[in-house]
Image (tube, rainbow, N blue to C red; front, side, top):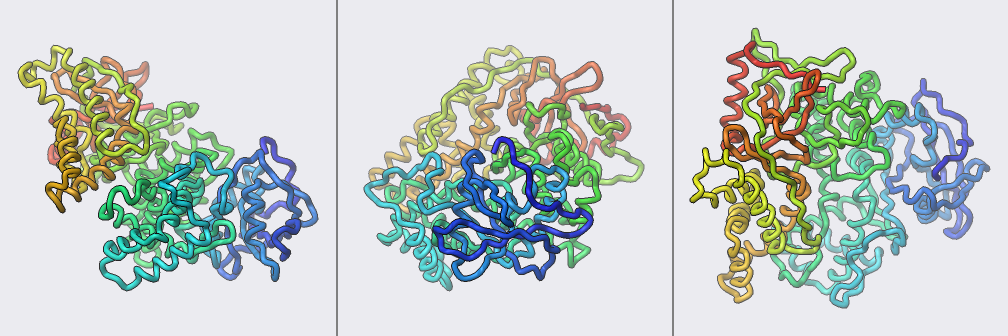
Amino acid sequence: MSSRPPFPFDPLDPSTADIRLLTIEPAAIDDPLRCTLRHLALDENLHHEALSYVWGDENKTLPITVNNHTIQVTTNLEAALRHLRSNQKGRHIWIDAVCINQSNAIEKSDQVLRMTDIYRFAKKVVVWLGKDDDEDQEDDPMEDWKGTARASAQETFLFVLESAMFLAGHANITYKAEELFMHEKSRGAHLRLVEMLNRKWFQRLWTLQEIAVASDVEVVCGTASVPWKYLYQTLEAFSKAEKTVPLDRYLYVLPLTALRDIEFCRVEYQLFSLTDSDPAKAIEYEVSPLINVLYYVVGRRKMKDIRDRLYGILGLYFDKEKWAQDPRLRPDYEKSHADVFAGLARYLIEDHKQVGIICTQQERDIEGIPSWVPTWASTADKTHLNSYMDTKPIERRSGVDFDPVFSRDGRTLTVRGRHFSYIEFLGTPAEETPPSESELGEDWISFMRKIVLKWKQEVTSCPLLKRNYRETSWKDIEGDFCEMIIHGMTEKATDMFYECLVNEGLMKEIVEGSARGEPQEDRDYQLKVMLLDQARWCRNLFGRLGKDVPFVTRQGKIGLAANGCRPQLGDILCSIYGVPVPIILRAQTAGYKMVGPCYIKDSMDTKMLHEVQDMFVRIGKGLQEFKIS
């Protein structure tokens, strides 16, 4: 569908609350698909269903008949319509590809405003994962596993239902989940669940909104179905058991991140919904759920149009009228990508003083985007620099005006702070090839050590370091870099992770000690946590560490330029009021360019950072102004 054919149906009246609703006419599964499309007012009494699915390859299409017109839909949507069709009565269901004129930017923008209500008012949201044997699934990780055959979707969902009933009412869910894991029936079902969780639907961004607001969700794969709540409960119980069953029992760990993203958004949406009935909570929750989802979720999700990275979630956390009336936020597919992201950034900074968002990673290839505007292209896992990124609004103090100021065209942001140093020496990004996704902690620890040793070798050639390190204590630099990259981890194995990163032989000693069976419980548990969790930590860290650049300041302190920014010699290091970490700025002909956030050794203590912010308030008008464009 590189060029869309004319939309053959009557336009919607934007002055009404009308939507189009599709009715799949009853027939046998192999009969031609015939549907009708009507204009109806959207309200709670519509008694419709809504489909949550992946479009699939737009160049692979099949015909269906709608209101006596033949239209083309993707093969995945055609399969969904065929499998969801009843042979007894019509099925009334909202589907974006058919119910919105995708070629009309004005209509598309207007209907996006209504999508939260479309899924919230639906009597059921139907998740279509695809056919049982999905021929479009890429990179199937389960080609062969110890001779175990994957269960069918029907067998898998039956096992999920049986597991949910088995787990119900048991206080020790982990113990009961172990019993399920060791059951022979679970092997094939586990394989199928891993395959399903790797399907594209779980990575899709619009999924977050469609499921978060739904009152009832049914998951369908081929001819099999299961309620969402039972699927989620069972998978969470399995994930707790993974660390306690033998390591050779399940080689493939359930990829639950995408599933948890959806549940995270459900919880944040519920927090936001509290503001409807409790005005006292309105201020507390007015923006924090949105900030949490932007920082921790959207960077992992996939979409065809990057503007949907915002449009796909803003409906969860804004009253529809406010969303529609604020020109900074209103969906508009005629706006440039740069203007869409700048609009949200300006709202968060102007209305909620969230200046710290300027540290978030950007996509540099978006034409015309100001350097201070975040595009939320990556997630802020609670490791490394992001442990400091719990942005807080600027406190209002009498007689002090630190409000950030925007230029008339909204492209230049003026903030206040202090310039405290320059970058005098630069290393280079890591160019090591990381281990494969299936490798466990031992290989990843060794890989991370290579990066640390590379950084050490580079920075020790800088004479400025002798101010803070004696040549006899160059070893301390390794520990300092290790501290930088793992700061913020709170899981139980954090200390052991650090020790393994610093002590090259410790991981091998632990693995070999466990293989000999000594000592028992605690060491075995720690080993499993490390093998399963530390590989994840390292993979997540390398997503940023592979791009981080070590540097040395004019005062001889080592640091890391974070989030993929590209510093240059002579860039300035600043503390900005309202920004929780030091930032790197580059002087331009007029003002500055935002380069990115950084970590500087001995300058990141949380208490010290708070004291710096308090100092800004005390010295007030002595601060410098930085115009960032």
